Structure formats: C-alpha cells, structure tokens
Image (tube, rainbow, N blue to C red; front, side, top):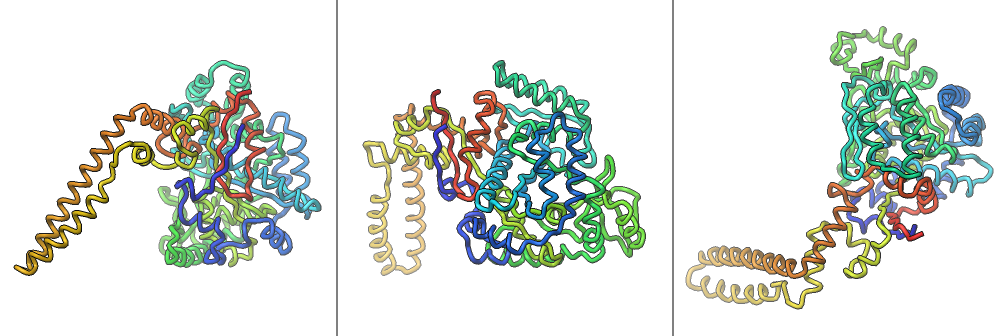
Length: 532
C-alpha cells in the first residue's frame, strides 16, 4: 500500500484539546506524568515503582489462556516474561464489540504492538509486552451489540443485563450469518469466516469469544489479552476499593481537576460520582450509592451497613466493579504498565485522573494517542489530481469542498465581496446625508443595509449553486468520494468494520498497519491500495 501522512490538525476531525496535547502544551503538564516521546519513557522507566503482583497476574493469564485453542508460543513467552522485574506492559483497552466493531479497535491494538516494539528497540535491556485489556465488566450492551460493514448495520438482538463479558453467545447465530454473508466467497473470506465462527460458536460467553477472535488476529505478534474480572486480581485492588468507597477520594480529586481543565477551555469527558464502583454479580451490575448511614445497590433490595460492606469487600472483592473513573487505576495497580494507548477522548479523560493517581501513590503511564487511518481505493490519488484536490481537502464537508472547487474553477466571478464593498461605501454616504437631516434615520439606513447584504449573500449562493450545475460531473465525483470514504458523514475508522478490508487483502491488511503505523509520530495515516 502507498502511504501518505497528514498532521492531525489538517483533518479537522480532532478536538482542540487533543491538538494541544500533541503539541506539548505546557499548560497540560500538571495533568500527565511524562511527555509522549522516547525521553518521557526514559524518565518514567527510571522512577517506575512495582505496584503489581506479577505472580498473581501471570497465574491468572495462564489460567485464561488455557481456554484458548493453540495459543501462540510468543504470547505464552510474553506472559512468562511478566514475572521479571525488567518487563513492562504497553496497554490499550476497549469494549467487547461484536466482530471487533469499528476499525479503530484494530488500530488501537496495532498501535500498542508497534509501541512495544519501538520501546524494545530503544531499551533492549528491558522487555515490553503489548496488552489488550478487555472491558468485560462494562454493561452498556447497546454500544457493543452492532457493527457496520459495507454500510449495513448488523445487530445482535437479545436482552442483556449485567456485565457484557459474562453474556452467553447462544443466540448470536443470526447476526453471525448476516456478517459472514457480507464477506462474499474468496480465499480470504473463507479464512475470516472460520475465525469468526470458531470464536462465537465455539465459546460460551462474549469474553471467551472476543479473546479467541483477537488472539487469532494478533497472537502472532505476542499480544496478551487480559480479562480483569477475576477474584485474584480484584484482591490486589481491594484496599483501594475499600478506601475509595468509604471516603469518596476519587470524587474529590477528579472534581477538582475537572474544574481546572474547564477553566483552561478543555472539555472534560467524564464526571465522577460519590462512589465510583458498581456491585457485580451474574446478571447484575448496579451502582453503589450512599443512603443515610449505609449503602444501597440501586434497583435492588441489597443494602449494607459500613461494617457489612467492608466485610463484603474483604471476602468478595470480585463483586466490586470500577467505573470509568476507577478502571484506569485498577489497570495500573495490577499491570507493570508504562503506557496507555487510547483514542482522543480517552486521552483527555485520562488527564482528568492524574491527581487521583497521585493521591494513591500509583505511577501514571505515558499517554499515547492511537494511530488513525483512512483506506482508499488504488486510483484515488490520480482521481484527486484530475480534480485538482489534495488528500487534506477530503476532510472538509462535501458542500465546502464543492463550493471551493467551483470558486477556483469557474470562468466567472461568483464572489460579490467587491460589489458589497462598493455598496458599503455608498451606504456610508447615505448614512452621513440622512444623519444630517435626522440623526434617528441612521438606524433605518443600517437596517436597509443589513437587508441588502442578506439579499446579496442569497444571490451569491444562487450563483454558486448555478455554477455547480455547470460542473455536475466534478460535483458528482466529489460526492461519490466523500460518501465512500466517510460513511455516515464521519471518519471511516469510527464506523466501518475491518471485515471487507481483510477479505480483500488477507493478513496483509494487518501487516500493512504494522508496517506503517508510528505511534510516536502523531500523524494521520492514509493508506492507498496499489495494483499488484
């Protein structure tokens, strides 16, 4: 594939806050640990403390991988490496979207693998293990029960309660049939069908299905997949669970940080609650709330006195599930982690958490924006060249592109700004004359001027619209390109599933990402297919 890189600011698709982060805005320094570059990693490695119980972590991982058919030897080696003090993890996390969901799920994992490789090349005396943290405890089924492929929405319809990772996959067959039917018939299509069907039919729940699917795609690169919904791992976090529920520390610290970020013009992504944990059992994940002198599990009859709740945490820490505020802290307690790879909104929400990490004495990881990409057909660059457009032009709205194109290519002057300037001068003379007769007529003059300006704007729009009709072929090409590359009006990666890209390229699809993604060189990647 041919690759082109754009600055994120040229895509008009990322928030001012993330552009400030990538630009190393010093105002954001108090909200991160070290800079997202190799020097930042060097500094963190120098001071990194060991929070995690490596023995417990590796035992849990080996237990979980005993359920994976033929796990890759590199994955098992990486799990064993986690017992060594010189080994660190590079982590990304995501929900259990069916069939992997949108493309950016794949991009997150590739960015994580590549970052681990780059760190190993720069610090050869240490080991770096890429980790995918499955959000198995999340309960928002509506966010994960569908995917889009070739513009078609495929949905897994079922009633769902509790943690999504514990949902059985017994009735996913219809969604599975619809998904595999879109893949067509080819060698690569059959390969992907086998992977998908084995994952979702051969496993009992969504956690196991996702683990097998992701392992099939990325096991050869040593990616370790973790389900943190486990009693032994929750036990490592139980002291913080107890302290935070009893004293609402995270609420205080994150609220204070949010106020500071708001004052800086940074739009915060999450808001803390008094208690940032859910009570978790099969079919149940409900908020814990303060009620009088005790605690209540919402939408249930379950209540605890402070003493009873403390006993429950000590005996059954696995029943306490961190929400979005506390999940990152849980991650950093049980993993020897030095980097989190996330999307733009995730990076901002991690910035909200730094003060809470400091309070609990847990090292804050380096935050790395995942790579973003756009796949284009093999003739796109030449097509754009014929239209006198560049890749960066594609990231504007279709109507804006067409308007600029017409203004640049028309043989007529469609912009009436010069005429308006002349009329403006005339109105200044009229205003001066009328004010001498009656000063109150100045307002009337301004009102007439405003109406005329509006009329001229309308006429200008009609001129441009008429000229667009004269260039209908070019306008249709622009519409076609935008519709194909920006499904539902947004970035391709935020909607389209990876399936058809895999069907066309096989495992070379992932290899192309591995080859071209540069997590420490934050630029948008455009991958254009080339004739073989």
